Length: 90
Image (cartoon, rainbow, N blue to C red; front, side, top):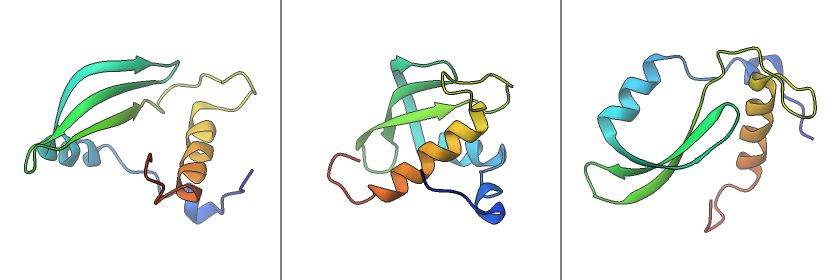
């Protein structure tokens, strides 16, 4: 597991980021659901390209099966995704 520094942990986007997302992408059908997230097919409005977007609700106090808060589990997932960035399936 990669530990986050305090500065990295504070880099979660604020709620205003969602406005920019919806201005750029058109969400479509739900592809999957989890305890605190939903994956939707999205279309980039400018190019028409399709993407899958994982929308995570970090506002709750729920814990995952390892006892991590939703926020901590989300930060862990972000770190893992950073490690595999550039892979053709990510």
